[in-house]
Image (cartoon, rainbow, N blue to C red):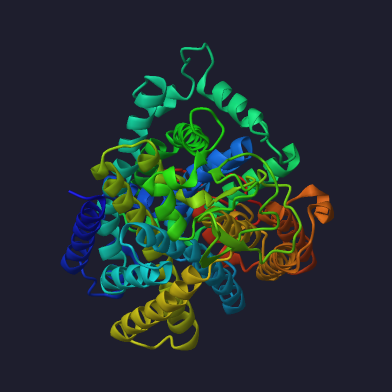
Length: 606
């Protein structure tokens, strides 16, 4: 059976499963639409949370980013994993006990203000839109390759599927669909990872295969370092980012994770606070299965890629003899070859042939069959990246999808990876779209503009806003601002700079008031957007980075500015009302504690 037929079968079967689950679990009330009725079991919720969390950035882009950036790419792995631990232990139980299932709702009630609710609503929608752009791009990439359609049509197909089980099923439909999607995506990631590890290192598990010693006495990482050095690249284990910038990017990813609206709402779909803690533990287990395998997959994939492109003698391969996967991805516009030296061979080595950013691919070919390129960039080389290869451009997002074909794995493995990639992108896209629809229908309409509307009217607004959000997300997926992981990193930076500080201080600082929280969020939002706009749109250079912090990591600086502004304004303005302080004390004090808390001092009564 051909690869195309298998891909259609695997992806089609997964679509039928998702839509069937959505119809079976269709939401009939706002409680089911927003939080799945609050009756999901901890294990199922942990699996759904893992699927929601392991987006296209994790499944598609993370291994590719690490493969091409080497040590610098590890910050995504550390930041996202550490951030979930922070969320699960530091914030989730308290937010669950507070009882408000959206970030704007928590901030609006904690800071006793519709103004605070409105600013948080703006931030949550902006974060979700930026995040969902990367997911829709991931859908387009998969369909463009395996369904033989343009990326634009791939995004449209993904929109139709998401509409069926997110807009109709709500959180109830999405939760049980994501359980199925997790099973699909973890199998799709681990099966080729096990194959690659066994072929490259002789170890079944990629976790141990990465450190395995080969026949020549070197490890996988030492082999990769030597291979890249010979080709003129920096060693794989040597990063180009400064230690300070890596630290700041890791910090922003951790704190941004803890402020992601679509993850926070997951802890309200279980019956109790204890179940929320238990589901967080299950989610960590399910997430670790993929994340601990990523470094091995990245290293194995990079070695296979270099050996395939340059051939056994490392002198390059004649273009006409390149394997089918190379030309297929080239037709999709995600691989390009420019015969820089005119020898007709595809040679993968360090150079600056594609300086200035991502090339635009045209339909024409050169005399020797190479894809012609035009460069829309500013012409300034981005020193935070691994130098582009002299003759070959490879989109980072395709490595996981191309790995099975590069390694000549069976066609059913390739088709399984395609189904898993679609599941990863659609699962998170659905969760983000529900956050947007919930924010509009519940926080804007019900809590602010029309508090007297009925449950049925609120559900109608939720579905209408989800449809509008889906259309805008589709447009963003067709016109993405960068690599999937880069787009997601920007969303995390905004989350860290805007909503994370008021959530953290709202739980652990009784004195924090509305004026301080609103001022901090606005400072974080404006500074982050201004910094990113200047360096990503206008064209600032790395030499101009403030304190040596890259645009992706600037959310950490904006987060500090947010906290400093909030604290300064807090001490210059009156404290929160007494009932709000009592509410925070009640949220922080575990059940079963016998001593009451004095609101005035917070000290124990003796």
